[in-house]
Structure formats: structure tokens, C-alpha cells
Image (tube, rainbow, N blue to C red; front, top):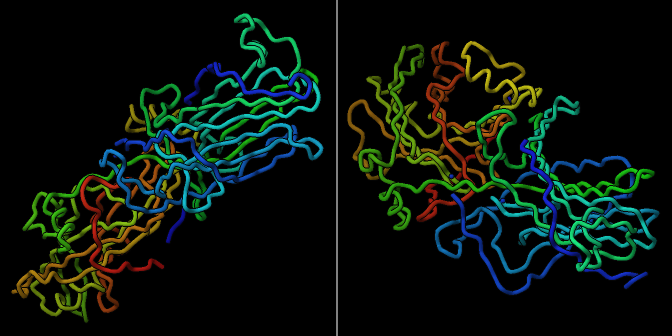
Length: 487
């Protein structure tokens, strides 16, 4: 294993707060389940002392739970816990001298599991409330909520790139008196806030952003934080309370998890029928539309001191976007005139096909973003400061299809499948952070076979595939084998 702005203007909230006073008394889009009943809540509490310092949240770890679900219009399935009418409520506090005076509450989808951070899927909006409990009059100039996303590749400033910074005003002194909706429009509020206040808010979660100064639009990346990869993607919701000139702003940062909507493509009609009927998937000869054939490759080497050459053709299921928790069907055809080599190498233990993940990132992501267009315009301009973390995530399991006649002559055909872990990160084409997958054919894995030195330690065939977060239309793929554990 080898490890190597969009910025929006600040719209004003038109919603008046609910008050009482001690002094004055965001692959295709799935449909979203709805409901007319008011939600119930479970509560997760986090406190933050009132301070002038920033407290960046610990990056949340991305993980998905595989569960088959049909949406209300029976057209989409999602990899997340089943929705219920309830929601989860996460609370974060700012306190002064052990007394809580500001609370940020975030609502997220309910789950059968307990998550430390609120989770949002696709373009789910981020909603919640801001509550103040002021035991004495305070000067507050404004209250804002910001949704921020950034790529971090180091602790230094140049190792951080903010690609999303979307804010809304909750309240400002230029708005009306928060207790009196009848105040003249545009009249500046001159008083101080005292007592309790509650403002609801909703921040839209965009599905894509444009790199500053460029025409390209990219889907925003998923939350990413893994050991062994010196890059992560973080999202956070920031509450900022601006005070008077003699007091610095109060700030609260709450980490959140984002999982994009990426829908796998439907399997061929013949493969869907096989899944429904509990049969093996049809071979490339029986289902030519359901497979992609890679160019034939010749693997050469010595077996028991004898030169051998094997012609291999790898087939990968089409379409090529798959969902975690399912499998990638594979097929291989091997030809050689050496019958001993065919018996020893064309076996489930020797055929070496694997799924490889590459996470590509940059030492200075902001600079890489500024150079993106220049490199695209000039093929002679090379990339600089790029890193790549490469990891084998799964290896194909093989068997001899019982429907085939006993192999005749010099050809052997094997069917296989690559098991995809349920917590597999989805593909990501965001710049400057990519998560890419490829199915690769490597030389045969047999100690007595010495492959040609030019073919060692490299992929002989590589084919890009996509990893989704939503099941496609039709039946869920049914595995035929048990998965192999990758060491």
C-alpha cells in the first residue's frame, strides 16, 4: 500500500425571531420524503467557551451506511439510514463564566446510528436556529451564519483552499427592532439586546461551485478525512456575533458532514433479469451490451524455467458506475499454447485484478487552482506540487462459470466480481482534490511464475470506473462470492 469561491453576498433574513424577555417579556437527484407532521428530535450537545480565539472543529470522518431504500416516487435509492419523520438536533453553545448565552442548533436527518456531526446529503439545506439568552443588555451589531468548505493539505496557510463560503444575515442593527415587526422599514435599531431571542435559519447547500476566475463548474467534494492521506475536505457552519467596538466578535464553528448525490447507472437488462431471478450474470458472449472489452494484452515470463506467453482480454461490466456494498462484475479470457501454464495461471488464486483508488491533491491547492486554466491552455506547462495517495481497495474473486462447456484447447474463461466496501468513498472530480478509481489487471500472482521485468509492478490494463452513493434503477446487484480481505 502506497500513501503518498464561490462566495455569495449576504442576503438578509426576513423572518422575525420568536422572543421573550426578562426585561420586556443540498450521477441524478433523489426525491425527498416529506411529511405534514411536526418532527421530533434527539439531541446532541456541544459547548464552546466564549473566547476571541478560533476553535476549528476536528475534521469529521466520512462514512456511509448501506441500506436499500426506495424513495417516495419509487425512483431513487440512497446509501444512508432509512428516513423517519424525526430529525436529529445538534446543539452548540457559547458561554461566558460557565453561563450559556448563545446556542446554535442544527437539524439533520435522523439515523439509526449516533453520529458526532450533523450529516447532509445532496442538496439538503442546512437549517436550524440561533438562540440568545442575555441576562443583561448587550450591544450586538450583527449575527451571521456561514457555510464554509475547504481543502486542507497542511497546517500552513498556503495548504488551505476555501472553495465555498456562503453566508446569510440572521439579524443586524440595520434591520428592524427584533421585538417589533411594526417598526418602519429600514429604520436602524439603536438599542441593546436583552433577554431571550430565537431566529430560525436555512442555508442552501450548493451542489457545485466555480473556481474563482474560471468558467469551469465542479461538483463540490464529499467530506474526506482518512489516515495515510495528507489532505482532507472539511465543512463547517460558523455562527458569528459582532459586538461593539470595545469587544471582539464571538465565533462558533460546528463541523458537518456532506455526502453528495451520485447515482449509479442501471445494469443491462439481461444482468438485471439475472439479479431478479437469482442467476449468474450473463457472459460477454451472451450479453455484449453489458460489457466493455479492454484491448488484449500479452503477459510474458518464465514458468519453471520455460518461457510462456499468455494473451489476456479483460471485460468489465457496463455501465461503469457502481454503488458501495455491491460488486463490479468482471470477466477474463486467457489464451496460451502452454497447457501447463494455463492450468497453473488461469486460476482464481493467480489472476490478479484489483480496484485501485487514487487521491490526488496539491501542496498549495489555492495556487494549483489559479494555475488550472493556464495548464489547460498550454500542454507544455507541467503540474507542480501535486501528490497522489494510491491504495488497493479490493481484489477480484474468480470462478469457472458452470454454464461453459469444459475448456477446449488453449483458452480458459473465468468470471469474477470485485466486492465494494460499504464505507467506500465516492468518486470526486473536484479540482484541486480528486478521488479516482480504476480496475487494473496486473501480472499473474504465482511464486513460480517470473514475469517479464518490463511488466513487473505496474498495471497492464487500467480502466476508470465511478463509485456512486445512490443505487440505480432496477434490482440491487447480488454477489455470487465472498469478498477477499485486502491486507
